[in-house]
Image 1 (cartoon, rainbow, N blue to C red):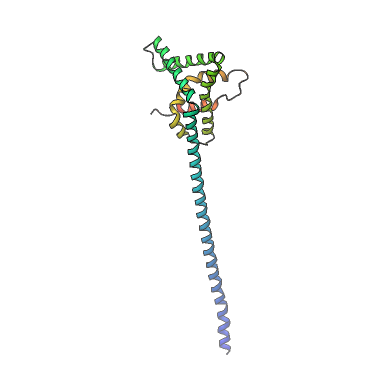
Image 2: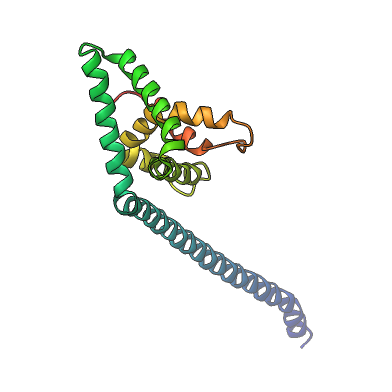
Length: 201
């Protein structure tokens, strides 16, 4: 009888230890499953967020493209016509001019023309400057990283280069005037400078 009691007493702590470790393993498994589920949820949330950002980015690009093609259609048409007229006047005077000299004369003629129509034809002036205003918005969105600069360059590079050639001199003059806020069309200039840094295609 004493022997049986001793066996029962000696086996009691042993089974308690087994139960303890089984419970620890069970709790560890629960914690592991919970952690895995939480991680899976975080991955899903990140994927959804990335998807939402891509959709938002695409919508912004589409809205810019729509505005450029529709709201600024008349301004772009007038701008193109003026470009052709100035190009013709330069070539009529010197058919062999080209390269940097042609670009220099183009900038000078645009700067002079914009200065003149600012006083004589304010409606035409506002129409031309609306193109700069558009790229001011685009440039701000790029600098704030709302949209990808590569997408903007792919879509508008030719137009940005033309803005730099035709409007840069006038923008610099306006920026130097008294009463003009600091940073006048700075985001437009940012896009122009960005295009200049790109390698030739």
